[in-house]
Image (cartoon, rainbow, N blue to C red):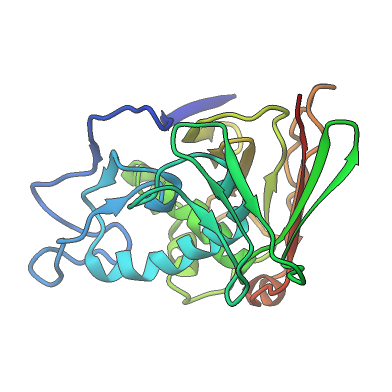
Length: 280
């Protein structure tokens, strides 16, 4: 039985009002436990990374040091979802998102608040390709920026860590040690799958299973969904099996990523992602 602990959703139209989680009166960092007497809290701490259009959901309980450390994991998540960002029409800090892999010049760029996007390919550049593969179907393939799967998973855990209640944090201190690089934690599982239609929607949901005491973090970005489980310390990894995700005939089976710690920490270079588009 799953119970929702936290949920937040937005699109390019809003919401516009800001939401803050955590306590702003007695400032203490959730990640290092230091207080305002020892560290500063001057930076805006985005629960969902700003690179995915979040301008309204912030935490009051992350110090500037941990915020800087966490941005490394956010960069891995950005690299993992680079094509989705370039096609989503979400606003970044200034203007729309463009995916280009330097030093090449070819790029994909979306337009804010529009379903239109541009694909510009320079001759001889194979970092980005587009090919007609059938009637009204275009296959676009792009090389992704370097990223590590370990960082992607840590970015998902960070989202949940911002909103968990104290009793759930106490049972998962091994995850905090893993986030800070003190221990290895492996294997881990997360999933991404195509939802079947383009959605101008971003959000996170954190749920708790009372029977297993597992907390699950969902991060949905446009047409992809990533899921990360946060088991309590007494869960004997790696003995558990990844939970089933039910898919109807409308949705294809999810891709399940499973990596050992050494492989996950390595930076993936040259990985490509291919997306097919049907058009009128």
